[in-house]
Length: 297
Image (cartoon, rainbow, N blue to C red; front, side):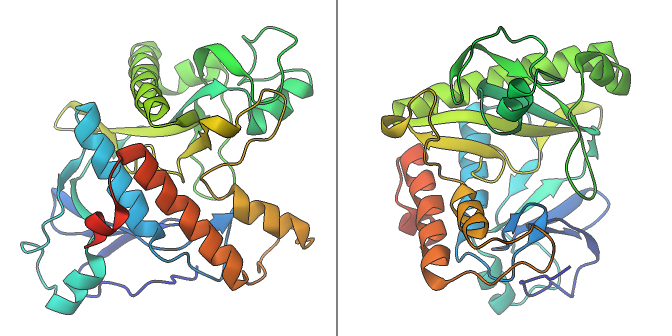
């Protein structure tokens, strides 16, 4: 896996994701680092998007505070992290957070408020796990009467696999399934209401949860453009493809040049890199109501 990121050699490396690097601080705490990597169609692209990792971290921090849901975040103060020098701390500023270790629930908690993406394709094809309860006659990007909980397996490689309600209950048990469903929908509704007041629609999102000392915590990133689909409200029309604040802009360019979705991915031209960066930063500023330069400064 191409890192596109300078490692933190002083700390034991725990795991790499498409975007994130995770390091061990001790037996209770981890260092989460959001890099500027970007992936499309499960392939990490050769060009980073400057400031993307800081947007992901900044939005996660914003929502952890706004939601007030028990979560794994501890601090962004890295002065107590052993082995880091001043240059490394500066590199990590705005993109790293110390978090509590948690035993992660092996299920992605996906909530959809609009019919789009893979669910729309499934719905068009006659239905499936994510659309089994939906009525006929809906249009692409249509707002659903109520948000739906469509959990998926957590795949270590490739795509997550959508679960039926019965399959999800079998995976985590009825009691935990119902708790995760209710909590996920509640968080989605509150976040969607907040975003709507800022002129942004939260079409869908996914959450991860884990247990620490017996407490259920919201973990990983939350409500970022990587884990969520955000649309500018002024551009949304049912039946049409709305512009988005996520990496759909990159996917559209990759499709336009005929890439077959097999590695290696083609290099991104500078205008696509900058256009993607602008979209991520606009998402941060519209949703938080704050200047991104204030966060990074």
